[in-house]
Image (tube, rainbow, N blue to C red; front, top):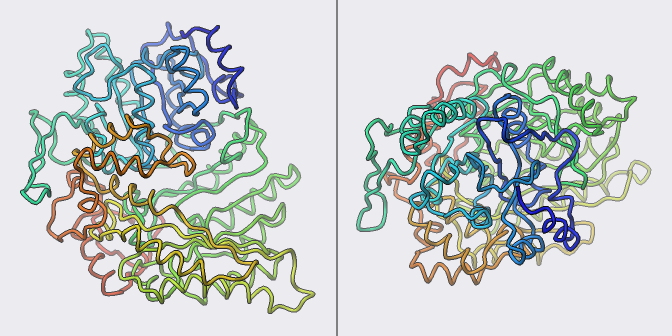
Length: 614
């Protein structure tokens, strides 16, 4: 346990001490001396972000539900806290028992965003743990990682002992059980890893080597340890009704990014948007039943006291029983003033009846994601929505009293022209006109439209993984093309940092050779890279130059169709030949219909067994 006197002294000096004290409602504190496996779950970002992540709540309760195991939380300390900790020589600790992270058996990082990688290094350093797996002997905790970015684990492969590829609810307990058994037999890290390699979904980077061609592309990746599989199949939970779902969530003392209950309706997606990694790697689609969701809602409302339920999935309006579920939730909890919210809505699946139910409790702003300004470009990315869909959805929203609208777009999509980019202004002004062309007596509220544009990042396991990213200069040219054309105070235009998206692409498409870049950037002071006020682009560029990394090779280069990718050894279920076919269709501007309207032979087996294609 860390020095409490030092901690108390530090907490009086930092901005938000509640980030570090634990003791929240529904947190779990066990006697560490009475458990056989100690797991530290780390979200490599600030407390408010990590506590809003549903996966953290699931795994935290899943592990603590086991009598012999404990899971405690550790987040990235904010800048003020880190400064005081280093000044006082206080190592990083978990929230529950204030135990040094270094004293846990396993540290598990969730990889939600590539630009959190330097925070992982910072957490290891604050815990007095060497960065590189090869430098850690049996006395150090086992460092594991999972989450969406683990689908390309290679940029941080040198730091991680073990990756979980796919969904973690089942494989996590299998892994901890194996750890517990091996710990009893005199702990041997290498022996444990050899056994763990036999568990489906487990990738051990140290068991593989990579050969490169003269042009720096990958020639071959191969196992160097007997028994290590040449292909890692993702883990998938087959029955979401039967899988572990917590009946309580930790309720923080301070505001977090999402102060609400998040309820997952289903996993997977059938639309086949060509830019969307999640829509590919989380296939096949699997739904939770309305009865099970009502049971989950009852448990979480009773245990948390929250007043909003967010119905979350990749495309929540596609949930088969959405109208039934929202009606049941509103009818049951309307008297308690419990509201229901939906995230960004697909225009083609926009449900008037669902919206009517939601508005019975409270209205909020509505968010739609056309993604591209023109129909041609929406066909390229297979978005499958039209301008007419937008007009229909927005017109109804205005009729029912909504007046605040958000539209999400991407800039830098394949084959994009200036005309496509200017479509962002066109759609934004179209929405404004739909509001003000209504009779004055029918306009409700104070109209405000926010159009937001992110910079396209080609992601692994998407049809657009072959396509090179725009340069920073081209991103900014297109951004200002839109920004300078919007001259209406009712319409605002926001855009993401092109510099940051450039680095994100480097790591999203990167390989093992980037580990030296991450260490160099961290040594030069880079951390919290996803935070605009802390992002140090010039420092990153200096680190790139000092490590002789070619950023064009990773981010901007359009890759050959037969190139071996750093992530090709992972099998997400969707095969590469299907992705390549979809890439070619994208370049030709050809649409591919929704999977629910007929199988597209993506590689996922027996989709019909999940019961949502009837």
